[in-house]
Amino acid sequence: MMKPHSELTVCEHWEVDGTRGVLIRINRPDLRNPLDHDTVRALLAHLDDVEADPLLRGFIVTGAGSAFSAGGDLRKYLDLYANSVRFGAFLEDFKKLCERLERGSLVTCAMVNGACVAGGLELALACDFITISQTARIGDGHLGSGQLPGAGGSQRLGRAIGWQKAKEWMLSGRLYTAAEAEAAGLTTLVSAPEELEAATINLVAASARHSPHAYRTMKQLIDVGRQNTLDDGLQKELVTVQTYATTSHDALEGIHAFLEKRPPKYEGLPPVSSSSEADLQPRTQKGNRTRSLLKASARRVFGRIGYGHARVSDITSEANLSQGSFYRYFTDKEAVLIELLEDLLRDVVAFARDSWQSTEPTRSVYTTTRKYLTFYEKNADLYAMLIEAAQREPRVREMWIEARDIFYRRIARMITRAQNEGLADPSLDAEFTATLFGGMTEQYAYACFVEGRPSSLSLDDVVTQMSRIWANAIFREGLVPTQSSAVGSE
Image (tube, rainbow, N blue to C red; front, side, top):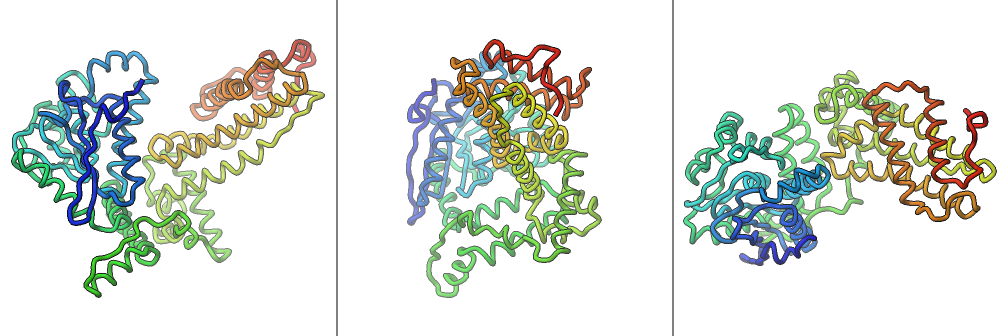
């Protein structure tokens, strides 16, 4: 059971000239503040609290005692490594924590007061700033205990200090002084131990006075620059600044405040309804054709090389269009992926309409199963994109879950209706049974149509076999068809 985050961490509030924030101390100094699953979830809970309060703008994380964090809890890893599901859940939450620190509108800072190793370094790398005590030591250190980074260390360190220097840090396993970390370009500020906290708070407060909307958007642009070609990055910057300048309250407020020689009154992030997506919709038949061409081209590119490796330039080359044409209709490659997946969800909803027939319950199961497998086979490339992108994009993950739930809910409705009509075992939990059998069917579809695993059965035979398995498990005795009268093709 997870301990309350008040036991694992300590939250202190600070204020500098009206700018407010929090300082979170990882509070397990006897173990050098290890980052186990409970501690990661405690930090996520603090982020939830701070992001919900518009008056709080800064988020500083540090360690109690003489260490920032010596990394993962190796004793607990012995149990975690024996359970891949639990270990995967830990990694997912740690990844989520780092992404929220890195991409959100809060000003985030790792105040390295002492040893910062392995997972501690990964946590620090996700923050906007790293401040460090003159007496602290910092390094990757994973290889020292035969481990590997799992929260972004192998990817963020090279982007922070350059790949050649990062190879030295990761492959040597040694710890570096504050002066060496500063020389490598990793730290923003080096301070005497007794002055570190005040200096860190003043640094964060200075950045936290800016517009939250502009701050988060600036972080997104920096991230674009790290992940894209110069041409893609420049085009993205052009589109982003045009959208921000013409739709954001804070852009105009900043100018008025400067001209009027007064402090700005920023409103922060715009509501979802004020998004500029509507401005990107085509207004002519030619525009509609161009947009459809870009979507079709993106689908082919994502299917051929994967969403993660695809660039906007790949999509426009496939469509034989300029990159400017792409940005006229989509803000980035995620936007076109989202639209492709929204189309998929609409089709899922359309085919998921009930086809229950109480006079022929087994045929209803057959019809549902066949529709699902046929649809999955036709859209295997989109399902592959959905599952790939769901690992890195929270919004896509939500869409993946929704696509599954639509299918599961339909099955649950069929089971409930069969139970109400006295045709199915009343002791079965409809939702659990739907999830169990729906997951089985989904996994088969993925293995067959996405991974391309060969099957000795035709689609008709597969559907018939699955229908019999479902019918045997769900319906009362006497309703399961014999082989000679088994449900057939439609």
